[in-house]
Image (tube, rainbow, N blue to C red):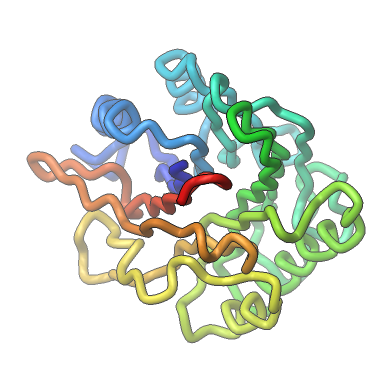
Length: 258
């Protein structure tokens, strides 16, 4: 089972030149067809890109939301293979003091509201349940990021009867370096392990000098022994990349695989 975190870079045209989404779309489609991930957690999805993804990837179900009060601008969506999973539950909430008020945010974060999309999936083959949380944290301060993560962790703690900590993956664009307060805050959660620790650059800004790791996949410690591989997709063709972030792919053995 492959689970991918993928910041798509939301600009359709304009300043990205040959790397505008309209030029990358075919490359993105080819990569998905080649790898066939079971689950893809997308960030920076805009209405045009979502429409294209849904039209070209009918084998995937999409769930998520755009981030503003009017459900506009960019958002995040989890895509999963329909023939592999049954959707048992799903939710969208804002990382804010009022999680179910669309467009809400903390006072000390940027002007951009931040959303988390959650899906509860049942594997049709093994009957295993998997909880997936897709997020895109604020880019301003560690405090804002920790507050946002606090909303996610509080959501899980309050729903332990339905969200099994032993079957959970939290992934996305954390907008945080490995040695940041934000990452230390996550690693304090002893039930989680960083599957992407030491993976290297995930944000490359179309190969400028600004290169760092800000994309992560955390999963339950109970799932750690099932990690087969973790890698970044470094694909490039004639100067065109999959995104300004390298997609991060976690491959897990299934529950009964030796």
